[in-house]
Image (cartoon, rainbow, N blue to C red):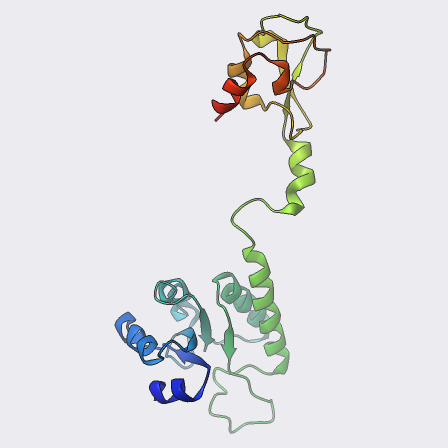
Length: 220
């Protein structure tokens, strides 16, 4: 079936409920290089929260980069949003959810399906989960706080050219400047001679100190 679908379609969504990793790998081979999104899935209807197995998403990503989640978790109105956030944060590339209209009493999926209000909350939760993942490093929203919270090295009193810097000459004050020496390099500056005079309170620049290039290469 997968091979036939791969012949007829450019994209396939393959759910992996109850499948072993070897079986999933076989399915990917049968897909013949077609664009595939695997769906992590707990083949249990409905699925209890403790059986949702969201960790399966990252496990499947070892085999294939694009992995979503086929959701059968029982999630009434007050929980639909919360579980949607969990799915998003788990890194699901897409989310599939059973839904049913309130008037459809004969729907076989009623035990695990959500109605329109819950579906909307669930989708919003997934979206917010995606947003919450963010990046692995600092982001632009932190720039202002980073500048205000971090410290730069300052000199406490006016110092003449040729002065040998001591620990008592320096202090760490906010804010931080990209062009200033950070407090972590204070021990590297102590014992160096100043190239020129420095006014009190002026941020200690690298270019003020003899052999500054050597010091910079030794900075942690």
